Length: 211
Image 1 (cartoon, helix red, strand yellow):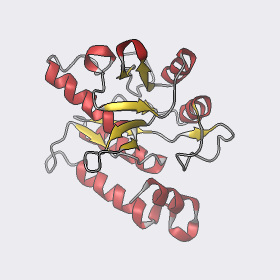
Image 2 (tube, helix red, strand yellow; image 1 turned 180 degrees about the vertical axis):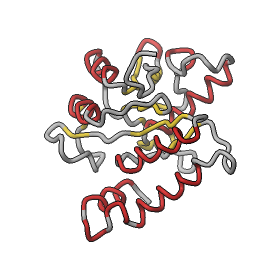
Image 3 (cartoon, helix red, strand yellow; image 1 turned 90 degrees about the horizontal axis):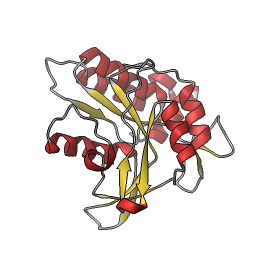
Image 4 (cartoon, rainbow, N blue to C red; image 1 turned 90 degrees about the vertical axis):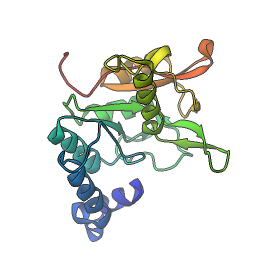
């Protein structure tokens, strides 16, 4: 049930595309989660799943519920391509290409928020550092925000967006990088040397207009 499996199904007709087993599994799960009478949630995350056919279905699910927010992982693109997403941690991610391709999706919803880049955390089972999708750490920021009080404040910045259990980010962001991400409604996660920590530095949903 990996993102790679979803991508392969969508890329090859012989694997079923939107009728493929992995795609249908995620869509069925989201169909169940969309039912407010059966499932009570406030946040939805599908860590590591970036393929648009699933993330679009995730948006549809929370919009149908109208009482939850989708913390969305997005496709990352390498420096040399805007047609094939990054599939390996060995590839260098381009902020410009990632932001450019994401903007073409023209998403418009207040029920989802996107974050970038991947982060590095400690695997509690092995004690080793592992690279994980941003949604894994951003869930922690939302939990911290609720714990601090006044949960309607933004889960961002030094007080409410500090990611205590996150040790590093997969892509270093310049000020220009952060601006280009924020311009297309992607919330940057950045390392702040003066604060010696990783911070969510954005509070946008994917709503197109200013609210």
